[in-house]
Image 1 (tube, rainbow, N blue to C red):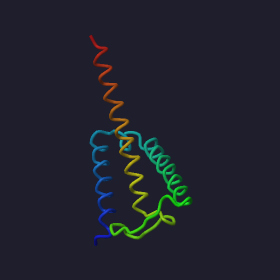
Image 2: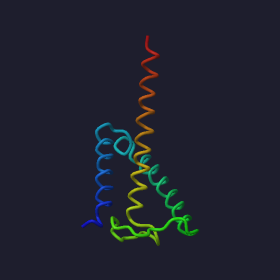
Image 3: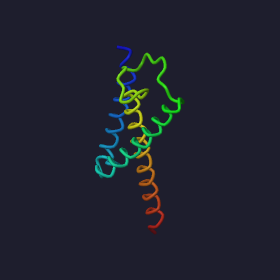
Image 4: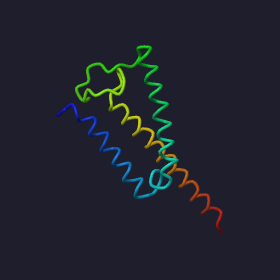
Length: 112
């Protein structure tokens, strides 16, 4: 059971981000194609980064009791894929939320 904790934590965090996104219609629930493409490009970039790191011996799994043991590639656990998705989704949500906030602030300042 302990080997699934990290995966479960990542899924709960992703559900939390999706809930916030759904509530405020920030990314996937506002413009799903653009948001999915942005997240996908970010995940692909970091997966290539990981594969380069694995190839030159910088990244490796090691002793990891909280991982399921499932791998998408050598030395790349499935949890890494979910973590990268979480990272990119969170960055996108923050970027869009702050850009909206800046647009609201700018429009408030423009009104007399």
